[in-house]
Length: 135
Image 1 (spheres, one colour):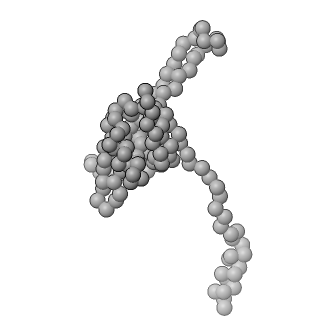
Image 2: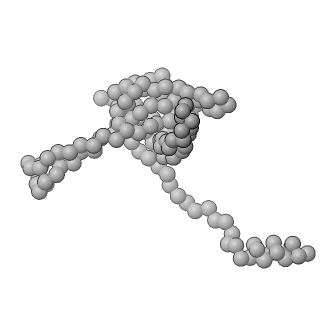
């Protein structure tokens, strides 16, 4: 009976669990930096992995018309992982270095231990969709 009272009291003071809506979506348009590789860790699903470069360009200076200022550029490299069975296989077969593609997915932060037993941080895009674009 004491336990019942405790549980009843505890459930009255703790608000009910409500799942909050959130979003983790990434959209990238860029060029493939290396041919995809297929990996499979023992007991886990296979994955196709490749790198994707995206570019940003902007003009510095006072002019907005495009006549003055310097043009700056930044290239960002993204690690793309494809786990979906059909998409994984098609990506592995048809994506090549230099291909222009559009990727939709979610960002994932993880940790792994390298071959020297050092813990490393890893950021990857888990692809839900890969669209091949013509040059």
